[in-house]
Image (cartoon, rainbow, N blue to C red):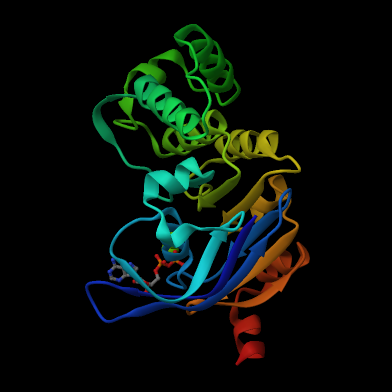
Length: 251
Ligand code: ADP
Ligand code: MG
Ligand code: MG
């Protein structure tokens, strides 16, 4: 599904190397978690994969089902089936949430060579999915994320993901700023999308999200590299001991 080889990335503006050789392979049907200290490059990895500007790839590769992601524009990466739920979801004043979702869904369908969803069908689907995420009708009408609380923004990201049905979902600290109830809703939204053809990369600071979204593989990222990989027990080790032991062991 997603294969990243020796990915090295620096900032365009400054001569600062952020990713120093990331290797990662996510198989269809699996959930990989990435944990790691602040500033280790987790968000940078997700931004680079999704096609955000400001970064220069100096080495390595990233492919989705064999397609070279790094050659594609951001919208074509989305059309290829990649989705990123942002750590800090963007507000889009003037664009209604429902309009935004419908445009995104139909653009994706067009890119896949499928017919547009009819207005009636779209309404039915979006209302059903919104309901499971406890997103009310008013939130669907308001401009995207404008005036939404932190938890509402994160739930709205999951609604976008549920509507787009991507092949590869990347969630960047979707749990940060969520209370326990919102985290459960978000986790249920993610778990509902788990299936044998879809891959997930869940970036999180905290083990508690992984109590709800059970990962197959856990990676620890530090200073621009994945320094250790293991099973779910690795997340518990971090929860109990912090990163210091792992960092010392690796050094
Ligand atoms: P994480 O998500 O693991 O906390 P980030 O990917 O956000 O880490 O950041 C990795 C490093 O890159 C940090 O040292 C951060 O300060 C730096 N960095 C990221 N983006 C920028 C930027 N636009 N300008 C300056 N430094 C940046
Ligand atoms: Mg951070
Ligand atoms: Mg981050």
